[in-house]
Length: 240
Image (cartoon, rainbow, N blue to C red; front, top):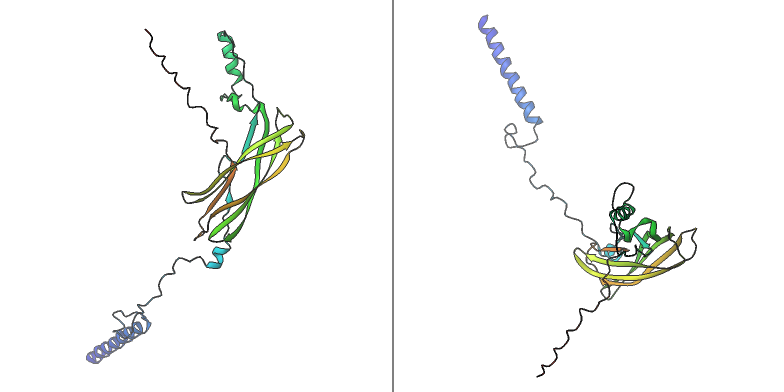
């Protein structure tokens, strides 16, 4: 009786082990050790997507966006007239002059850029552009809209604003031109609106959407050339 009991347990154990191996083989989808090489793994996976290319139709519709660089959205005009030169000045007068050029927060005020001497303050409020293509070139029309606000030293007249328009391709300057645009200001109680348009900004036609256009005030314009120096006087001929 003991032999039959052990034999039955041994047979049941073999049956249970065979069932577990069969179940594991059915559940495996890879060609692992339980599949016995019956299943093959798909090694031909689709390649990763490539970088999207710009279509010709998209490139033809491309018109570089115009942006404002930092510090180019405002332009102030100041009244001239500094302190008159004095022959003699004591320490008290020097201290008083220094205090007059110091703001309430302790910062030094540039006498040439004193806010109390502002005649006009101009600002750019919007920029836009339009593009056309012909003969391998891109022609842009860049418009700048803004306003001029009278300052503490307002006086009716004409304000001349240096507006620069530029187009760049990376670090290469394709176009750069400064325009001395004039606006007539006569009303001290309201802002004067203006719209400036650079009509003919021509650059090579782009081959990718990687052009940058800029517009803004440029006060760092080169001044007119001045005399390099006085001519040296010729030495008088020696006389006996």
